[in-house]
Image (cartoon, rainbow over all chains, first blue to last red; front, top):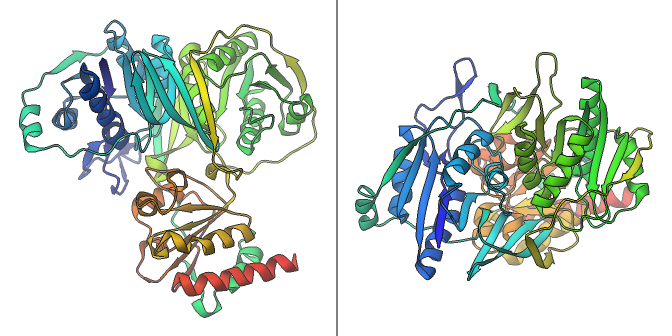
Length: 246
Length: 320
């Protein structure tokens, strides 16, 4: 089984978000970058489990400049066989998915994994776009994936519940929580990651269909109004009379 | 030109996020000087569709012959309707269906796409729109440069008003192809309102000490006509199901009222809830970071405060 795992970086989840250049750019000073959790904990680990059970290969792919390499090495340390970096600044979902689809189109992957979303721009776009560009089925927000021969069976989130679906591979999917358990890379993994192949390929030329103009932080809340715990019940009237939410 | 809105069919009815998307579409159409057209699929009463006129739709196109929610099939349908109606702006509610159909339509239509939209567009100088970024920790103003655009709208991001209107309903008889994805089974998680659509939410954290104490959270939620939610540790310890986990790696919600009981308010949790209009925090620790984001705070033990809130809510409900 030939598996491609799309890997993105994202700021560590505890990052305090600030902006620079007159609020037009994300301020990357002192930001700790991590492998996007949905790509690492769920996508990549499930891909490795499938490879361990069925044989085949797991390749990681990212769209980014050289500052992406530590993120890619981490994915290799967890167990991916090799990695591709498409050498361009990721602009938006359309840019990233066109780059990845262009690379993947003639490689014959059985499964293409994406994470449900990235924790920076939360677009929920790349998986479905790659599927559209490659004319493949796409199963979104999957919690569970089993493979039997060339048939994939998945549990996916739908409005107010879960749908169990089945489709023939090749397939693009987006992985959500619970698909696999996080793996911590061991020393051997970290050592071998240094020598695993990381191929840098040039990007195709694309127009910017969208761009960020400016950013704002949510307005600070006014001060919190404290209620004496002895009279906690007063809250209910305040929610009705003052806040008007009940 | 026209603005096209895709609305999901939820077992013959339309959810609040659908009305919000139609309202958004008609406001945008007004700004652009065009018409708002809606499309949906499956079995649904024409009267429900005609009533979308109340939110500004002039025409609803129904594909009765599409019986699947498969995004590949739906994207072909929406894209064909967009072509036929000369749509330059296509709007999707960001529910599970809209979220996976929208990116496909953006590719098919060669459109620029922005997700997580929380405000009406600015069309004075091109087309720009505000969206959530960094899981709600900030907002970005994005410009779409392409001639066509696809927008994914966040739930509960703006109030909607129903007017008086009646949309015409047309049946679509095109061919959207066969789905390659077969549905084997559907498991519904109780008949309650999905969390992203909830207007009021009561949420519990580690301070609740164990799953056996959730009765009080549920009772308060029922009295306030609210849904229940939880923090990440609570879901990780299996005290509550994962679909109740709100926060950066769970669900992002924007209810009118969010009551957090025994949750300290780590930055990851705040990211998922700071779009809430009113936040109430109950915590024993006066230094809990959540109080900084709260409108109302009670420094006290959940096991003493909750019975008082439940009692007061009963009195309040009886007086209504």
